[in-house]
Length: 110
DNA sequence: GCTGTGACTCCTT
DNA sequence: AAAGGAGCCACAG
Image (cartoon, rainbow, N blue to C red; front, side, top):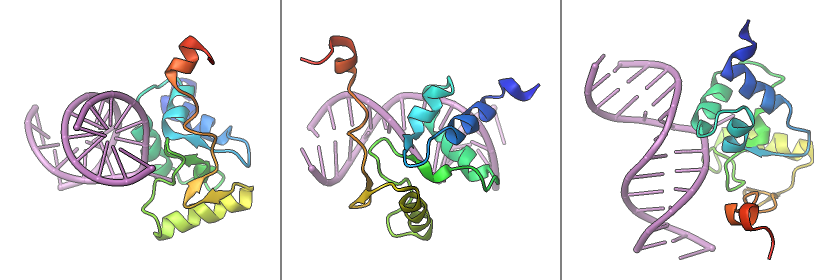
């Protein structure tokens, strides 16, 4: 069965992103149990022909769209995000920082 | 089978 | 805060 295919797991994680929210490439890869394969996630999204795949909800770790700013693909993703209710500030997705730092994970909040 | 490339990420200046 | 460089993995030539 193809249930163990890492590619399928990655696509499943992308489909699981709720409307109005975004996730980073690395975050998606980690959720799929494949840490460090952020680039693979990007390649999968490009290779996937599933129109129902919410690829536009996947952004870089900075909260920025991965396409060159101003490009057609960039505007397409920005448009879809806006349709999802995601606010864009200066080409940057309104994300609460880059998730959290490792120090905060280990040491906890001051 | 080695080299180059990219919808990435992290650390150091 | 912004810029540069190294590390990373899958795929095409």
